[in-house]
Image: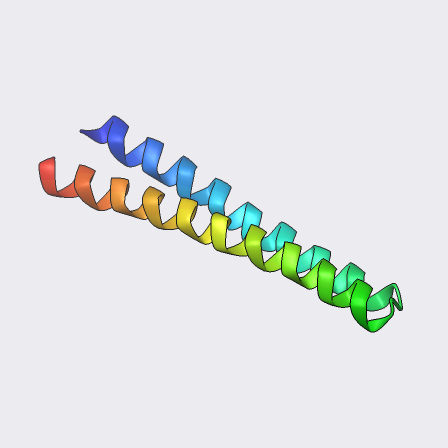
Length: 71
């Protein structure tokens, strides 16, 4: 079950990278000086990205825990 732990760690790292990418997009959108509607649209897309990345990270951590329990 060691392979399950490594797969889970990789999936979790991919989720973390997605969260960081979403945070960088928010930072860029705020610095761009967009109007209210443009900033709102950019933040809505970033929130959707962050929620998806958080779900991927959570699934990776679940795989790690499952690998530890089964191993």
